Picture 1 (tube, one colour):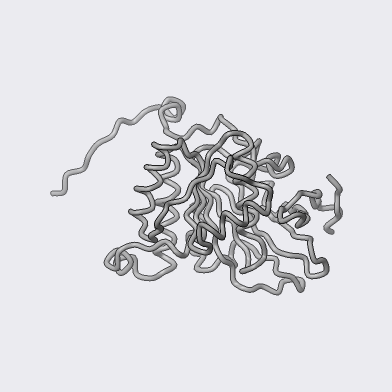
Picture 2 (cartoon, helix red, strand yellow):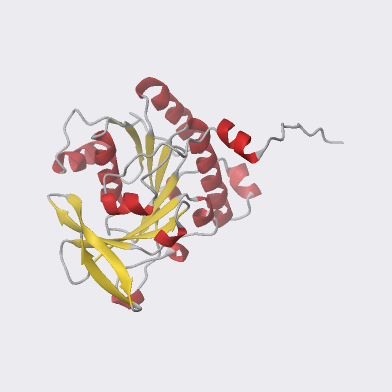
Length: 268
């Protein structure tokens, strides 16, 4: 008979105090309207997905979070499979960052999950990193045997997201993962929803927060951001925000609100 390890069973409120995740400490995103929809901001243990079709600003939006966190003294680490370290540095420089930016990257990058978490551990130990950015989620792989056991790629990604979420809680960090979405023509735009995340089975279930970003087809520098999920406030789902692409940054303009069944624009 298989041996089953036993754990202590405690009253809910007592067990919650012992849990690794601290949900009381709020870490602001740097965007007031978004923080209001996240009950004050991010928390340690959060696993946040940033999704959209290729080229619509996912990585720029993630870099904005990096800059905003750095302005509060919160260090980050980037595992970027879309850009080299040089390209990533150049992109941050265009946004006004310099050598004082407290963001780190591995000198050599591998895509194996165990390799990644080992080096996140290293970044936490050496630089007190609190925020991890993975660009993109689909680039993280595991052993061939592990993937075969999970049956298909969608199931693999679902398990990967569960593991990343549990790892974030255990290590008391925030993980931001960029995920491509399939092309969508809803309302003649690139707007996407949780169901449009590529190989999305299980990804949305594990996420603490989901953001969707897309460019406005009628404006060269206007982008929209929508909350696809917020564990802390379900009412925030589908709230939309406008951002202007200015000086290589995404700067907030305001928030959409529902009025008599129609979307109306409210200036911030």
